[in-house]
Image (cartoon, rainbow over all chains, first blue to last red; front, side, top):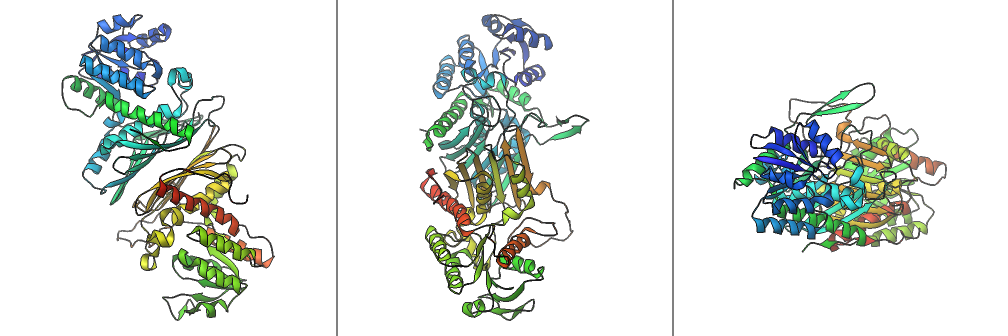
Length: 323
Length: 317
């Protein structure tokens, strides 16, 4: 299946490109980017074609990966769906619930796959955690405690017009989706405190402390803060503890690494499975009408609702109910 | 100086060891409702009034719900008081005890012992007090086993928020200042809780307290400030681990492994004794401990009412 990548703006572009190239079912058809300078360079690095016009990129493929700035997801996704292409869209699906819902409805109308990139569903330790929970090894789940801190990604991420928001927009959705996927429950209430005081010279939110209540009574919290300084040896991390009636399970999704020190810095080398590859496999299988764990457009909508509610709660200092 | 220890459970035992290291302190009696005879040569009293007569200083290590009554008696007899945390389990008891103290001349210190843990002192010393902080404080253990399991009942102990997380709430107030907004969630039994605190200086503190953790006792702190990050996890810094090929019996209440010449319980009691000896103010006053206890009690209320609670200003400050 030929896949074009629409935009190279997001930091996960390299992971997507590598997955498309290494997945047995996909072939990289080319790259479109509204920043031609950036797009040409990335295309050259990957030895693939660069398209200045999005319609040319769509003409040569059956499916696309959308890897743009958050605020441009809707425009690119809708263009691809109108051209009858299947879409795997970088998270968050959209910068608002209404935008995400428009995209999800359009995909239903055109009968194409619109998937949200939540690679944690294909993280091997996270999949094992799901098995542990489903087998009731820790009894009934009562609570989740999640941290997804990172370094500030800078660039367009700190420009609200392009990102839709800061750390809350960037980092709530991974763990929110993981909790939904692990339990099958939906978030019903959100409380959040947010601020901007960790990264100098930016005004967008870089601190977030979010609490959730699920419709089955599970309580949870998420730390999406950009709290890792530039000297931190890695981009951040994802950890999740599920506490149950008969035990608990601690997930460190990216713990599998070796550490290298030299005279000036510390480096980490990951050796865990490459989850983007397994997500790409699932994208191909989903298009082939197979049942997979891939997050669909409505999972993307659900995550976006949580982000919207978190921003509203942080502003109003009240618990926000998700209808 | 003569001290009596009121209550000889898990914390009474730790305090006795601390006093035994002090040349200028004699433990003249232990009050217990369950034990008789002598403990390490010290007479055990089953009658509280009789025990109180034996000393000038009392150390209250009884279950939380008994604090108010014993505190009142000790104040009435003009005894200096070391009071184990939490000071009490209801707002009413706290206020009553504050009034009793204010009308007396006795010295009262509360055992918010985390302030004497050197790792938490290092954190406090190295953060920038001028800048807001984004923090995560977590404390986890197995369900404690105590006499008649009093601490498992929320009505007696306050549950995991008041009994366990109070340590970290007190640290958060000590390090980041007064709290202005509280939101909390917990399980039905109050064995697990998640708290979010907003401080007057803009800091945000998130706390996790668990009595449902079987992975060994953990205390954890992560503090982020502008361009800075401090991390500490007790399980990552164990200086000595002994592994045996026999199954070990579990402690009834799990506490952090402390390998220090002067442990935090010794340090807090030493400063209390010195404050009496030199007639100086105690380092952790009843009023100060009350402010932390009040945050914990409001967190329990927030969890019950499922809403954030705002404090315009902490009481009288």
